[in-house]
Image (cartoon, rainbow, N blue to C red; front, top):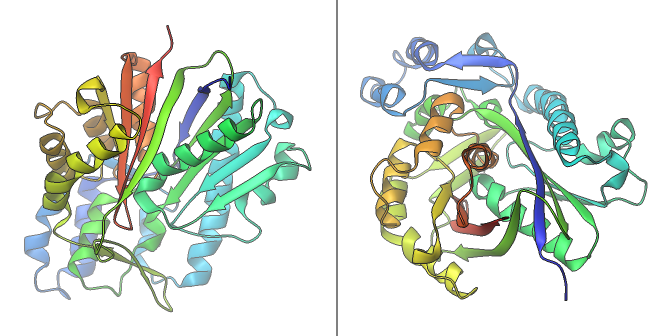
Length: 350
């Protein structure tokens, strides 16, 4: 019988630069209010987003100047590389492992790209073996913290004894656009931050939790809800206003379907650990999953301290849930471009 996959360790990190929401609101008003007639109406999002501060790859002054692909990807390679090394070292230390013990690395990121990929760029510095297996993944967006975790789990399960490193890195702030006078771009300036998370997984004994099941649901005819449009300047955000009502209407049914594939019911889940896409999205998730209003407390705390960091945000929530003490069974949930929902269930180890 193949041993179940265990989560051996978890680590998170964020860039050094901090932007307080009050400063972001003032700067956005200065940059957009005279050029965008509806800015006054949209500016309320800065106060309603449930965010106190965010961490960013560059200081606030950097975003007041125009930047094209070269600047953005140069910043991405530099800061994402720093975060990759930091969270990997933290996760290794907490697992009591060395870089040479890692057999496979799954890296997810949708806010920048580098070729060679990040894990290849830092393989020598980190001390990874030359036969290490690399799986860099782009395009899963906010869902990648859960779906990438699931992919890493299946890599570990398919190779008993192999130790898999899962790293999620997003620098959402580098997609900020001075030239985009649109509602989604204004909302993005109030919502997104930067961060990284890393997990180590292995089939065997010990660890923080057992990975019980993984699954995804792709909603048909929903490509326009979330994603990137790409032009000569950089990424431009696609973010439909319909996301919170969509989540409220359809997420619960999708998660119930994912759980049913593993003979689980919604009632079997003691705690949902959700990607906090935003204050309205969290309220919609609570309604869709039939949770008490305000019950996603770790999610709201992470949103306040870091904003929406896309894929690693759910790992920040998971860290707080682990510190507080995981219940018998929990479910990590995230939604992202596709439009899709991902779910991983975890069982606490006695």
